[in-house]
Length: 120
Image (tube, rainbow, N blue to C red):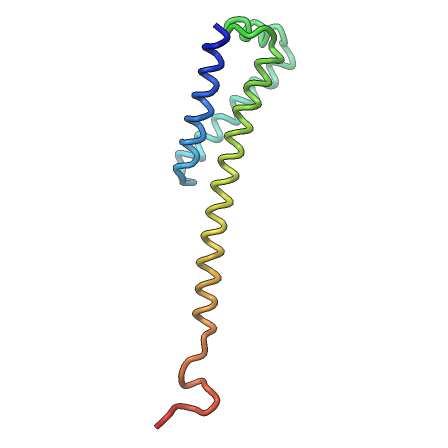
């Protein structure tokens, strides 16, 4: 059963990374992120208040301790965060490149602005 959980975690990491890499900061992605954050907050608070529930969930999945389950979930969330941060960084780089090109083109002197004036 433990190998099954490991396979599921690896697949979850791959799917989450692919989903976040395909781009977009539209309303759908924002809603998914908010739902995941709300679920995380509820589960984190519940696991602190009722640690035996977390251990029971871990046993259901074939994991020895609730702490190990938290560790596995943390790894998945960390990879999702890394994928999101990479995507945002890449979008920022593209925007800065476009802006730098626009500024460079805007600052090129026009032919009539040259020192000698326009040629007859």
